[in-house]
Image 1: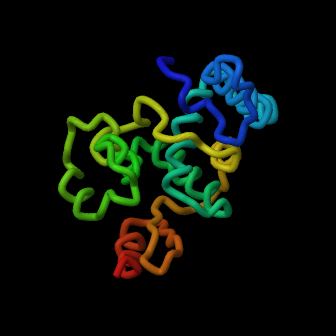
Image 2: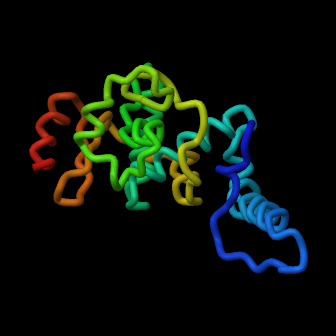
Length: 180
């Protein structure tokens, strides 16, 4: 583990201006992560998969904003990994391009979708990216620890703001009508 970045829990903290502020913030954020995530869900997190869970939770965090859908999206990702299918998460491609998702347009994604040099491009690389891509919320971590079983293998976010699921590639392609 080369960085603590994804284990620094975002919150509001009070620090003593007379002491090392950075040390205090790192300590407080790690302690908050420990209390809210690790300790609260210790029985759910195997030490073997802890880092992989954080990677996947970071993807779920950026791919799905609606907490009600996160567990289903997590299930879809687990299902894809279990059948050796690529994750195909646009957010990972954008992360590797150093592009915030809000400005990572469909044109940028289409232009870079085949870039095999981007180690975060889960459209070209199988498995998980090498590290988390964001600080996941407790909701995203819980979604990964307790994914919602479904028959879905695909999802997309339509221009209507809703998530559309598909069991087959044919259903997924039919759902692309919601992108217009």
